[in-house]
Every structure is written in structure tokens, then in C-alpha cells.
Length: 633
Image 1: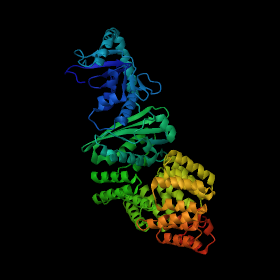
Image 2: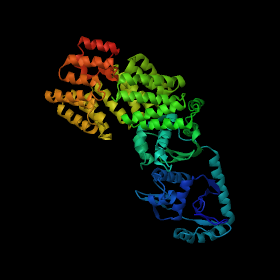
Image 3: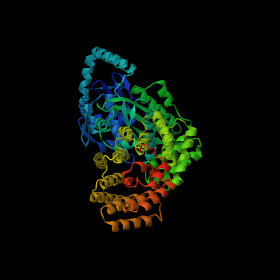
């Protein structure tokens, strides 16, 4: 849309003036900050005023046909940015109208044109000619208005300038916020780990702010690439405000655009663009979080100290850390092991990188808890990594949480674990995992009411987390509140009908309530999804045994024993099969073996209904004391 030197074409709508050749937007003579891509989008829409422009057409004209960029969130961001600058309302537009599921239409009345030096040269398209035809009569009107118009413009300019000088005091009602996944606008899909990682770290930075509830990563990821509006997202996540933005990386430079939106009204509250070297990204994250904190009124010196920049980290080490978290978040065995590789690479480049050690600790814990590796091998590695992280940064809530969890599951030191969980929560009240894992300590101690308080807090912070919602049901189950457990597991499965842990846990409740056929159906469905593993086969064997189909239970037991020859099978799972078959001595022997191997879930022995029939056995009671399960359980 270039024009010859010395020429420009400007169109007016309301108090705004847009230069179609440069994308410059002014209001009453004052230049407004319109970022490059939103400016291009606005020029296209204004050039085709009154015409519906499809999203695909906008993408073609703004991003180009050769790009590999996923333009969806970039276009969403551009439209929001335009509406914010134009102070237009998406629900009741007077300038920019959304045509649902199709595109957008500029509906503002074109009021006039201002030509500088020569006639406008932007006449190459029919749309541009049509606009010019509409504008020429208005030129006479502006000439006639003369001085009166100038006085109006001066008055409006003074009003606008006064508005700009005073930083808007945003509503103190903003007590909760969600950071939507930053859109990757880099021309390389492989940079997804980078944008996802920056999203995670921004969430972590904002979570340090006291008095502000920040939604956890797992609950915002489902909105990645979606088209839901801020009001709907706000209702679903129960938040007052939303942060959204884009990340664009070119070589050694990174540009982040972010904006703050009032969730209830969809009103733009603040926007900023940051353009830095990749080596400055860590500092940028802290600066961005600090800017947002100031905008929503959650700012004091202690907040500034909490958001202070960490020690400098080599750019490649930081990128390896981001890659590690990207794979860790997949929660698969392959993903966890890949994550460990990247965390270790980050540490090799920077031996003082506390967050990388915390990532290692989290990965080893998950390998053990999900039965991917022997716990006696992985828990000590997790413990060592968490201790190293705290040696480097005593204020790292993630590391305190990891060490607390290992202290519970591996060392069985309940008091020390509780102290560390409380420390982690004090450091970062928004860290959902701290509340989640602390609830497990509380429920296995027999403190069900306290456990429900903690897991409900984790649920507030991470409302769409499947595992958190599943643990809510598990705590009901351990408290023998079977109806509530069924309801919660059903709600979890409504979120994801294929979530295997909830299928298995709902089946376990059916076992306790004597509904064996329903239990078998649940376990069979989970088996179809996950294939044969120790947990699924153990549950299925228990269901067959309790329904009187002993032969089938023994057959499944044989499969588990065969499986143990090639992969890790927890003796804890084997103990449950033997118990369902009535072989109590073998069941206790397997539990003793599980304790010898430090299988983490032996901490459940004090409360789990599955072991109620063993509570009178002296050997079982000795095992309870060995694990140091609190008497309250």
C-alpha cells in the first residue's frame, strides 16, 4: 500500500484519522499506538468499509500466503487491539462488527479525507477508489467548518491528553487472572516450546503476587488456538481479568505483545509490546509480570522484590529448560525422559540453574508415581535434585514442594513433609501442585476435612486440571463418602471421557459399593485406552475376583506376572490382587516388598478401604508403624 514520496491518503471516521498508506492512526491530532499487524488489519478493513472481510482473506493480506504461522491467535489479538484503541465494544459495535464464524466488517461512517500536498496515490484497488469517491464531498465540509472545527479539535485534544496523562485506576475487584497461551507467530512451528515456555514462566511470575489468584497452566492450555471470548473464558475459569498475547522470534530477537482484558466486559485495560534480545528473556518475564501487577493494583515493594530478576542464565540453558518443561508437561514416559535430558543439558551449561534442578526433581517423581520406573531408583534422584535447587534458591516454591513430596513418599517423614509443604504455600499461594500434593499428605494422615480444603484450593487455581479434579474424588473415596466420590469422578469424565485415572477410580468405587459389573466395565474401558499395565490389570483382577469369577482373576494375575519380567510392576498392585483372591499372607508379603522398594503409595495403607480386612492383622499393623503412618489415620 505504498504511496509515492510526498503523498498520503487519510480517511476519517468519528474522531479518528487513519493513513491508509502507512497505517498511522490518530485521534484528534494525537498519534495512537497501533502495533504493526493490527494496523495492517485495520487498513484492510477500512479500505473495504461496509464489506464483510473473511478471516482467511485478512490472514492472506496481512500474513501472506507463504507463511507457516498459525495466524488464528494473531488475528484475534489484532482485532482485540484494534477495538481497544478505537474504544469499540464487541457486543455493541459502532465501528468494527464481527460476522460470526466468517469475518469482520468495518461499519463506521467514513466522514472525510485529508489530503496533504498532492492527491492520494493509493488508488490501485477498486475498494480504495470507492472510498475516495465517498470522501471528496466531505473535503468541502471540512473547509467550511474551518476555525470552528479547529476549536473542537483543540478541546478534544486537551481532553484526550488529560486522559493520557492520568494513569487509569483499574478496578480493585481484579483479584484473579488467567494468562492464556501466548500465540507463536514465529515462522517456525518448532518454536512452540518457546511460546509455551514463556506462558508457563509468566504464570509462575504472576503467581508470586500475594492476594492475586492466578490460574495454573493446565487450565489455560485448553484455550490455545480457540475462539472463545473473554467473558466466556472468565465465566469458565472464574477470573476477573485475562492476559493474552503473542510471541514472535526472529533469529536472536524476540518480540512479545501482551494485553490485559477485563473478563466481564471484554474491555481492553492495558497493552504493551516488548522487543528484546533472546538473552534478555528472563528479565523481560519479570518486567512484564511487574507491569501487569501495577496495572491491576497489586503492587508494593515486596511484590517488586518477589518479581526481581533471577541470576543471569545463558540463553541456550534457558531454552533447554523451556524444552524440558515442554516435554515434562506431556506426562508420558517418553516425555518425562526427554524432559530429563533437556533439564540436564541446561544444568551442564549452568550448574547454578535452580529451576532446572527443580524440573529434574519433578520428572523423577512422576516417573516413580506413574509406575514408569522403580521408585527406589528415582525418588533419591528427585530428592537430590530438589535439595540442590534449594541450595541455590531457598525461595523456590517448586523445589520446596518437590522435596516435601519426596519426603512423604520416600522417607515417610510426615512432620518434615508437612513443614515443607507449608513453606512452599507461604512462598507461592498460587502454586496448585503444592496444595494438591499437600492434600495427599493430609488425607493419608486421616485428616480428610483438611485435605478437602487443600484440594479445593488447588481446584480453584487449576479448575480444568483432570488430575486435580480426580484427586477431589479420591479424597471423598478415602473418606468413605462414596456417593460424593462417584459424582466427582463423573464430573471429571465429563471433562474428558477418555481420562483413564478417573475411569479406574470410578471403577474402584463401584467395587466398594458391590457394583462389580459396572467396575469391570470401567476397568475394561481404561484397558482399551492404555493397554496392559500393572495398575489396570490389578483393578480388573480384583473386580473379577470380587464378582466370583476367580478363574478369570487368576488368568489376569498371570498376565501381570508375565509383564513384570519385562517392565516394572509395583508389588503394591500385586498385593491388591492377592487380597481380592483371599490370599492374605501373600498380600501382606507383597506390601512388605512394596515398603522395601519404597513404593510411594504405601502411605495409603492407613486409610484406603481396600485394606480394611487386614487391619486386625499384627503383621499389617507392624507395617503401618514401619511406614510411620500417623495414628490419626
